[in-house]
Image (tube, rainbow, N blue to C red):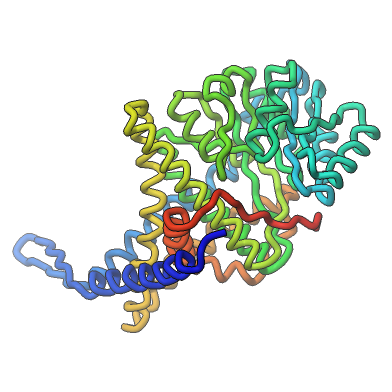
Length: 430
């Protein structure tokens, strides 16, 4: 357990750091900038606050990334070559304290359009309740098997164990609470057999309430932010809604036992130059956190995990084991962390403009953000993935400064007192 002084230092550092970033944003925001236009015999000079130009740039960022995401989500799935049958495929479902939700993934996988499919639930040896439920499902369905994790203690170990125990050359990984679309595996196998090393679909929280809707919006904001990075060749692939070949798995050495093994896997695939096919129009759903504490704890775990992956990659760099792609990988992680911190400075600039009655400084990016969420949600509802979103979608702009505080707190926690433990969100099956 972290010591009390380190906890106090962590909390105090978060408050101080957030206040400092807000102050820096305010100081920079009140500076004036000048733009001069020479129109033949007349010169027109515009003088405005730096805060205004920062909000304009941010609005353009929201508009561009939002448009790219909407375009991808709304893209037709008819361009994919569906493989209804083909090589054996093993769907791996790592489980831990998931006895109440395991039916969700297993039953949806049993409805898959891909024929030659084996479903393996990999349970921890001490998780009796989940083992019992997995055993019951295996008894009810020929295609379902129970496997006891031979590398207990992590999701990465469960996946690695399942791959080692299987004779298949193609795999897909899902979480226990994940509902998988019937066509998903057919699309994934079509891409893998056509030459892709990894296939990555989109997984979204089910917005069944106010907190759950915020979680849904947060995923949209993050998926949109990934679009700029993907323009430069970096494609995310994870350990859920993901399919890969054995050859690709072995090239990166499998999944590493880390807090966010999926993020580490994505960067390992990039450094190896693997072909990753991203398709966010292929959407599965998962159970969202039901409380603010669970939402915060889960997202902080993911952020601490990102810092852990960055730390590990930097150590590899110091050992001379990181090439050009490794440097890009490091830059990708650093830009994500830095960008989140910048949102705190941006928040004070926005508040300054609102104080000066420049309401459009808030209304423009707010409208762009809500429009992006609305268009994506419309597609998800039309596809039957969600029933719709609630009023808490209006809280989406608060996600940006929340990202900043979350990143700041995660950096301090990892540096001062992180002991390798991780936050586990309770899943209820709702």
